[in-house]
Image (cartoon, rainbow, N blue to C red; front, side):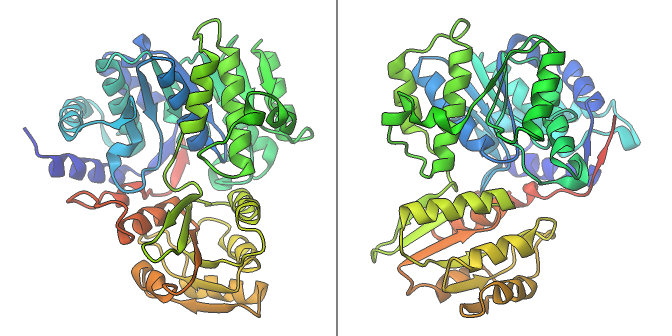
Length: 432
């Protein structure tokens, strides 16, 4: 039997095959593995932002209702096994070893350019884990887009599209309509779809049209739902107005499935109130009474939500920001927006080949807020040390970056082998 380190190295080796969009390989690999998805029930969640939080809420509610729930999300922050959870617990090292050994044998049947990618393999590993655990329900998050995402080989009980914003345009399209079309690709004939998209002229129109064409009942969640019980009287562990929108979306999904998956009001309230997710406006109080906020805002819409949440939570206060961003994101616009909200910004590279250059981030921050104190640190530990005297610090810019922060702050010991690099991917291609 291979060791855990060898299993992780096997996953690293799959990065050689880059990333591509298409369903042929994951379908074939799942078929070779015995089609484990056929015996499972899913809620499939796509969207630009809020997928992880919405999944966390659904997971907690259905567990509170007594179901055995599998949860599949990405990316991970520190450990790869964060992606595959059963009843709130990461799968064991032994489980991952067993599944990678099984998949390695099946991969011998693929040749050359048709070899499955890292994410395609991970999807089937997750399906095998959930099937072996006899999960009653799987909360199933897309990786990229929806229509051609490897997760789209399942037929769910419900499809959820959290929202649609500009992100990953190089793969999903340059307009909101094009991106909405890709994300709405998870809608299946006759299967209910729930969405928090609010742009009537663009994304929402596309989602409604596709749902209508497939005779799929569509529920559109608006801000009005935030003022209705039980959500109107709940205090959520996940902070910010955007999280209340995610909760409304989760609640609408639960209501749409009451006939199939009945959930009591008590379970709904307990689940929504207790749902947590690392790196989503996560507050840490240091031994000396300082506050550090970790937030995975990784696109412009995420940054906008973070700014609103900061204004609500820390009204009148100017935080110091520690920023690390990816070069394939809208880093100039994102860093500029954040710089206008603080008096001090420290830029540092992300430990990834995709990182934006800290010096260029600094230039964007200076242009946006000439009066702020802008500096560059060689790495994240040095950046955190430079703001050790600040009462309020916000670390943001990338979910990858937050994994580094959690280790640097002692929130996660981390595995013996660095697994954060498994989040990196090469250029994707579209395979119809």
